[in-house]
Image 1 (tube, helix red, strand yellow):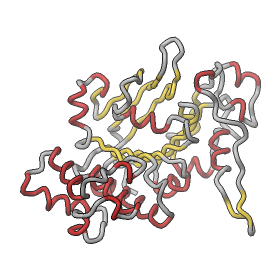
Image 2 (cartoon, one colour; image 1 turned 60 degrees about the horizontal axis):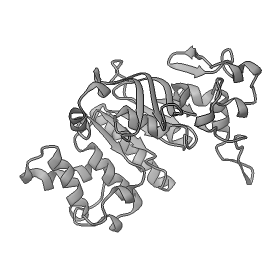
Image 3 (cartoon, one colour; image 1 turned 45 degrees about the horizontal axis):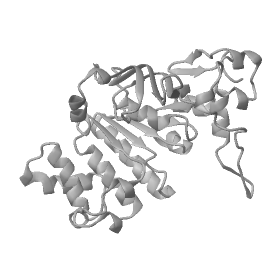
Image 4 (cartoon, rainbow, N blue to C red; image 1 turned 60 degrees about the vertical axis):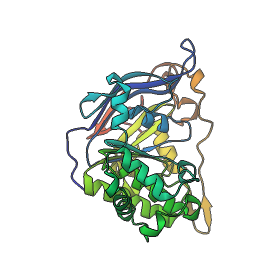
Length: 326
């Protein structure tokens, strides 16, 4: 993998996102501190409802108007939430891009692939005489076969993997410095997943872009990411280098999440589910949100807010356990 440049492109300080009434808020994201460096691929993992997608849309200022944010998000040294929305909109697609989860619903079924790629290029200032040529070039970069023919086809005429490649081509046509991919492989088979992940590596290697991948598939993070963020109930509970976290997870939730991955033992597929349910964010108590499901819980876990503990270079957990799980 490329050496990681130390100057962050994204810096996040005590970032939070809340919805609902002000006197009864639902805190979807709480107290996130994060840096993202150019050339770095970061995986964000956690169960459904943990706040992964909300965090990413918040980092690029693409939340619903009803969302209330707190804290600070800086992109390339500029505070996104202090900028006029027109300036942020101009950054979307040029400096910041997002690949959405479902390629079939993200592409307009009434327009050809070429029309949709060309529209993106036009909005980014590509001269009209060069639009078709650059649209074909964009499809070639994501290894779509016969791109000259594909530009005349409609989304339903392409496979799921090809549609996902089209979305990546559209998102990366302006060589953004930050690419956010929300569950980019969830609807694809294993072979196509590998090809899509290879595209993200190629993008990083070619442009030194930072990539955030939101996924519930831990094997995706293991194969392609440099760092992993594990989220639970809106908070990052463990973050660190992929090799470190996967080899020796230190937060009880991270350990349970990794253990819940299906594995083959002899002739059987073994699945170890995490006991209990994800908590209701509207009724969280003062202590650790994972306390009711944690095998290491003690009374102070339920009564007091957990604190971050540094365990090594870039490795930290949000837990009262000294040094993490032993």
